[in-house]
Length: 232
Ligand code: GLN
Image (tube, rainbow, N blue to C red; front, side, top):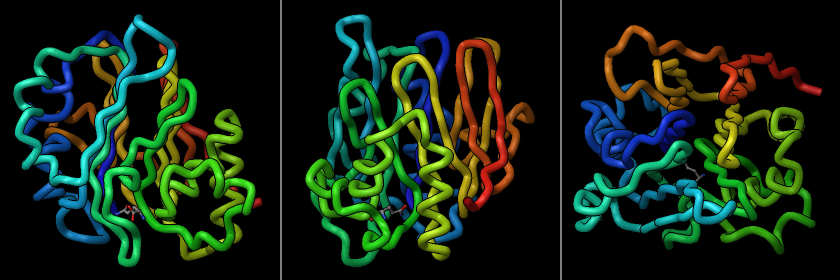
């Protein structure tokens, strides 16, 4: 299982979101607190963020461990955004190790990250040509990005086709976040200046709340909505 995090709200810097919190994504890359599958997330990392410059997000991915990305600590305090999605990777056995297999995956104005594992044979063949990598998460992303508004339905259908799949997915479009809890931990922080959705809390603030398994989380500027996901 990898770890991921997204922010929607007033602009915060990448440093403030990812590097500075005591148990933020950088710390989770070597010492996650709630990771049930795998121990370290050293197989790459990635971040995408939105700016007024254009609708499509900027994206920076790397196959290095996040802690070994020498320029990140220099750049991250200078980049601020109101919508950010980032991930650190613990590669599933047999999956490729290059940066194209690292989340976030992107299409148009969408960014997508997947924590978990899925049997690629249950995913439609039409998704493969649009996948950024043969990694299971990339093929899943290609399938889910074919219909971003139906994230919950598509995740539940994939979960029905592969009962062993773990399908925690995080999706951003610059104006809202969608997330699924399906087989792994997920938490939400409603802060005064925005909302964070993360595999695990980045600190011990009691405002973090745990999302029940098999739930779709929708975050808009108007608030947070939780919807149960049912196997179709
Ligand atoms: N299966 C995905 C990969 O290989 C995600 C792995 C994970 O969540 N640890 O990258």
